[in-house]
Image 1: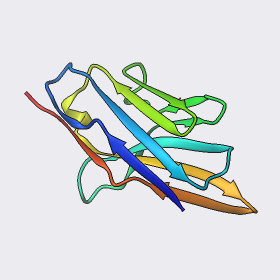
Image 2: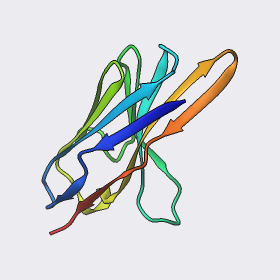
Image 3: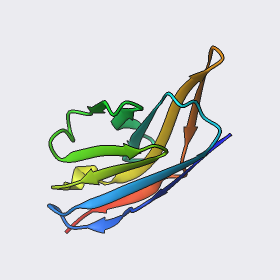
Image 4: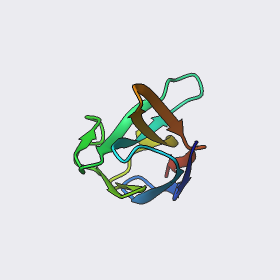
Length: 118
């Protein structure tokens, strides 16, 4: 089992910044991908915001490229969000994905709310 705990959400005005953190604990493969997803409305699916591999290779959604920066330090992951827009309002979820013994695993955090509003 893997536990993921997010922190750092909150409310900010357009143009502001927030930093999300995710701490992973438990048993997971040393080779894994950690990522941030968000759900902008309850009826919407979760969408990938950014992800980063064990060797530090990042991937970003087009809508956040140049504004958000993902980073990690072993089992801790961060998302620096700058120039926030109202469209970034969502519940943000931490995810870890890995393969072990020919089986794939996905774990999710409980989510943290980010609200961008004037």
